[in-house]
Length: 133
Image (cartoon, rainbow, N blue to C red; front, side):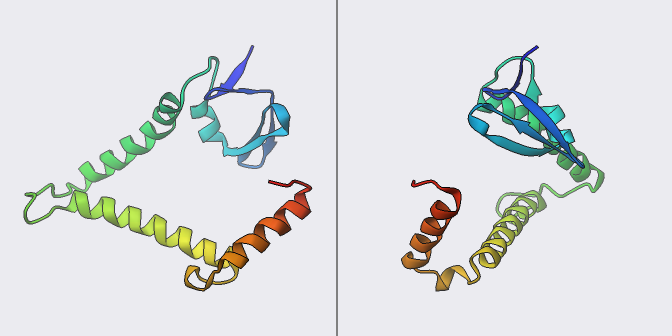
């Protein structure tokens, strides 16, 4: 029986603690939590929108349930409301954490990175991986 991750045929999977590594043709792999695998892997090929709906609907449901339990203010648009604030706070937090992780990986903040840093990073990666992209 065939399995798919979106439009990609899954050739195999390997347990990795709380995660699963999906294997695709051409040696490509993807590491997912077991829960995300259960939400994502299907018997038939599906497009990206269908895949994201399967993956993210439980998250949206949990968020909305929690917002209902907390009885978040929806308020009026001129004064503002807690829904907008929550969404902006979540997005800002994700962006901040991505930037911080990038600074750690690069060894310097974005404001100090130069084109020569980008070029040397790509060249080093290509040399280490044996590719030339």
